[in-house]
Image 1: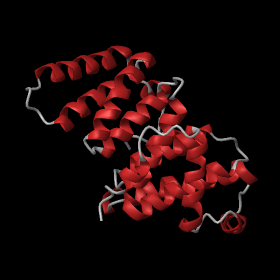
Image 2 (image 1 turned 135 degrees about the horizontal axis):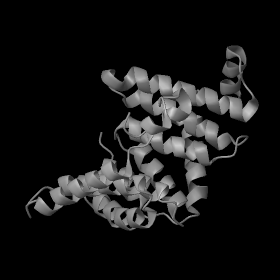
Image 3 (image 1 turned 45 degrees about the horizontal axis):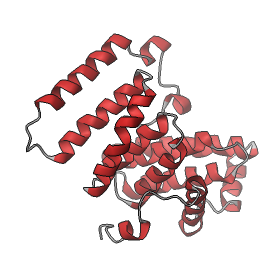
Image 4 (image 1 turned 60 degrees about the vertical axis):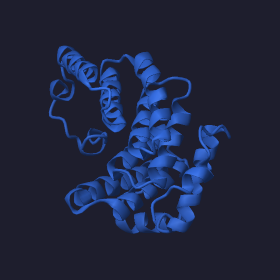
Length: 234
């Protein structure tokens, strides 16, 4: 999985050496991306240029060059938004969040809003919701809501190829949140917990997520949500 922190749920990595590529390899990858950008013709599609820039941003994160990654990602977010490239706008928000700058939490909220609102890759939407879960206190209902939304998005959008793995991941994520939230271990208690928090009712948990995002951005949205809603595909 490209975006998800699967090792926190399923223990993917056999060793720290397997998990962390050498700095030299990462720097070589960054140099290759920069070379590809330099060689792009002037009439290359914006989407292609944006993706190479975003890939460079993720690579800068791997090198712990957070200031550079953040400085790169914010204008890319604006460009992607203006071009209605929702997936790439969310990737820019992901980079901004992981850059650990002053606007990281608002960036996370914006990325989640876009990722839930528009039909982008469900894995990326789940990854943004996973970030929110990681940032939320154990007893907070916000983590439970985020996990429920993640499961709902996968059920709604995932294709046959990725559906089984993503549903397994989001179910594990919801179970992990239940343990953090209320020390839930048994299936019967888990089912009761889901019902009590209304995590099986999208018409209840989606508005609750919207309230969480409003709190995170503190009323300072970077875009007009009503204008963007008008662009949602039928």
